[in-house]
Structures are given as structure tokens and as C-alpha cells.
Length: 336
Ligand SMILES: NC(=O)c1ccc[n+]([C@@H]2O[C@H](COP(=O)([O-])OP(=O)(O)OC[C@H]3O[C@@H](n4cnc5c(N)ncnc54)[C@H](OP(=O)(O)O)[C@@H]3O)[C@@H](O)[C@H]2O)c1
Image 1 (cartoon, protein in one colour):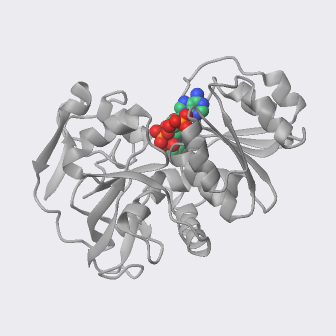
Image 2 (cartoon, rainbow, N blue to C red):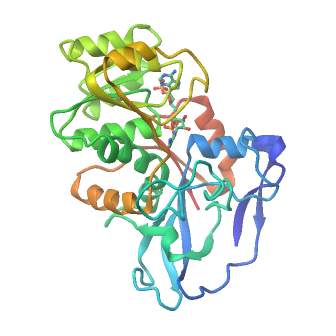
């Protein structure tokens, strides 16, 4: 079985190595064997393969994995051989309240991930994939897709007519744009690139603003809502963007903090946030139950995730270098 491993994590992308590993064991009771056909790149995976997030030598990276069930162990009734499935980000968080505040049990970080051809794991580590989706499209569900869904639908209780602010045009934000438009919301989105903003408009974005050209992008978004402010913000920037996001948000609005692209510490206008009675909550992806609900939701919405570019497993370093260049719009996938 071919796999990509972080052979020498301190060397970053040049420490990635394609290796041959023994095929996984046949599934025991409660387990399934999945032939992995695709994965997708996330900022978190980049942290692991670039050495920013420490990992052990030999770690198999990638949190996202999609493929076909090849064998089922005794007692598995949820899946049958031939089913298309997609991995979950927190294999032990099945439903209810979050249980873990770190990545110690996340495939591709604390556990081996899906940059490999085959895996045998408990059946509960996967859910079914949406009917009719390619493995590449399904692989975008585990991290980026589910985070966008949880931010808007689970936490935000999004409804038709709501206004949503999205920052940048990376994997999570473009997924959030597609979900929000499919559910009848109106969307403002920012980017450093006018060309990317044109692509966002083509996907249905109602208002766009270049955050590099307009420092007061939050004020422009607020003006677009006739000064009411947006109902929801999916915050990927953290301290460098939160002041403008708070400015753009309506009284009683909802900001879901999912990323810290601008850093982890900074000055936040807490007074403005309190006066506006804004709810700010941090989230990390979601539970298996959230993913099952999301997969059902995707089958009811009429879109396919935007995949900017695909690479083969052997070209993983090139794929991450492309992500680091910031040229992408939406998701980058791996074919395995
Ligand atoms: N909490 C969670 O569960 C969770 C899940 C997934 C991702 N995340 C986090 O969310 C963030 C985005 O992840 P991703 O996978 O979507 O990354 P990505 O695909 O690499 O996208 C990054 C994009 O962010 C935009 N960006 C960078 N700096 C920005 C700034 N100052 N203001 C506004 N936009 C900015 C850029 O868009 P333009 O090129 O358009 O300017 C860039 O292309 C990362 O911090 C990641 O770790 C968190």
C-alpha cells in the first residue's frame, strides 16, 4: 500500500516521502476497510506537513479521506461493501457536546490520516458520502465543508433572507458561500483579489469588497445592509479581522470564529462587541452527527464544491506549495 508520510517533520514539505506500507488488516468486529480515493487540503494539514504543528516522524498526514468500503467486519450494519464513504474529523465525537479541545485524536495530526491507499478503522470513523458525488468532492466534506455548515446552520441557525459575511476565498469561505446561497441567504465576501471576487459573484455573492484596497471593509459591508449589519460572520482571520467583523455585524448578530489566519493574539474591541450584544463562539469542525446531517443537507442543495485544482498523492508537496501561494479559490484536492 502506498502512503505519504512526514518522514522528517522538521524539514517541512521536503521531509514528505512516498513509501510502501503493509496493507491494513482485515476488519475485526465493528470495523471497515476503506479504499481511499481522494483527500483534500486544509490549512491545518499544511501546519502538520510544513512542520509548524509538531508531529512524530512517520506520521501519515491528511484529515480528509473519501473512498469505497472494501470489507466490513462482524456486526457492521451501517455500511456494505461498495458504499461510498467519507471520514470524520473527530472520530470519537459522535454527537452532543464537543469533548476534545485539541487535535490529539484527529487523523492526520494526533493519529495517522488518509494520505494512503487503504485503511481499516472502526465504522464510526466514516459516514456515507452524498449520492452521486465524486470521491474528490466528498473529500472536501470532512473539514472545510462541515466547518462551514456548522458555523452557519448548527451554530448560526441560518434561514432564508439572512445576511452573511465571509472573509477571503479559501476552502471554508467558498463552501460557506455555496451553502448560504443554496439556503436563500444574501452574502457579502471579501478577498485580496478582484479576480477572485468576480468568481465569487459568479457563484452568487451579492456584495464583494477587496480587503486590501479598503481598510474599512466592515463599514462597507454594513452600508450594504443599509446600516443594519449582517446576521452572521464566519471569521477566518482572528485578531487582525475581528474589529472590522464586529463593525459589520448587526446588534444581536452572530460571529463564529473558525480561523486565526492573522495570528492568535491582538486587540479586540470588546466594548463594541458587548454593546452590540454579539455572540462570538469558537468552533472546531463538528461531530459525526453534524456530518450525517450535512450529507443529507448536501443532497437537498443543488451544488458541487468548488475544486480549484487536483494533484496526485505523489505530488503532495507541490499541492501544499500551491495552497501556500494563496492562488487558489475554494478547495485543492488529492487523487489517491
Ligand atoms: N475551526 C475549524 O474547524 C476550522 C476548519 C477549517 C479551517 N479552519 C481555519 O480557517 C482558516 C481558513 O482555512 P481554509 O482551509 O479555508 O484556508 P485556505 O483555503 O488556505 O484559504 C485561505 C484564504 O484566506 C484568505 N485570507 C488570508 N488572510 C486573510 C485576511 N487577513 N483577511 C481575509 N481573508 C484572508 C485568503 O483569501 P483571498 O486569497 O481571497 O484573499 C486565502 O486564500 C484557517 O485559519 C484554518 O486553520 C478552521
